[in-house]
Image (cartoon, rainbow, N blue to C red; front, side):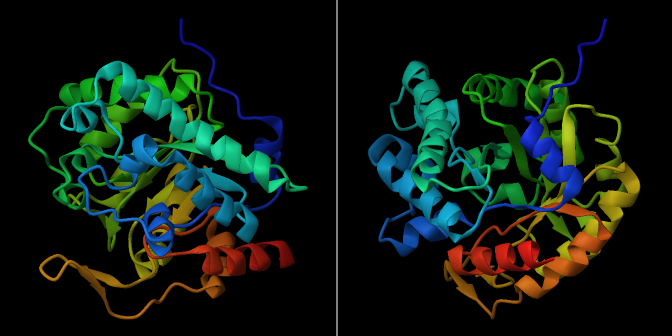
Length: 308
């Protein structure tokens, strides 16, 4: 017998049915802007162990800018990554749960008149490797191996009772299939968001096929893209809506380019709040930003959404 699909909170379900929910922006750039060094392999997840108040403050900045959803600092938080720093499984599980509590605490401090939600970030296998392979995929692992990697921390995050899981920056359909297996019976709804280039995943599979994997997954409440260029997001939103019939989630980067040799961002931002109207018309119901998108841009998005 199959289990019933997990239920969204009534308020979030209503918000997705009636309008657009505003996501936050990049956690890392907000932490860096307040003076935190994120050059460590654990990236922002290091601060869960060393300075969780900084994580809460970053979430609060986005809530105060107008975001409705905070995405937790667990993107690069894994049992394997923490183990390389000498952190055992028990403490690692506590830190994963703490990522959800930091976002909840920020929501309490925000004292907003509107509902606020928490999405627990489940980043790709490549994020744990900390070598940029989440932008390539094709790790050489089977779907079953990827499922074994993702299941323990996804279960811990779900047990911390976020409103939704953010399966994000997924470069590869094999990894998406593994995550969809993990979701079955977990009891927590999720969105599935690919990292894309043009009309393909970062691993080179057609986005149409990638989106189709989630079309019949009751646990998945939205499908889309993140950590891509705004231009790639423009193309992906309508495709995701057509293929899945689900609400679309979209939160691209600023449009600048990361130079791996120089370890610096180059180019000019192309992400403006003016893109939001087109995304909404094409089916987007969860809209925000990823790398290099800060509270100022999220504030402009929130104003655009609420004006509409």
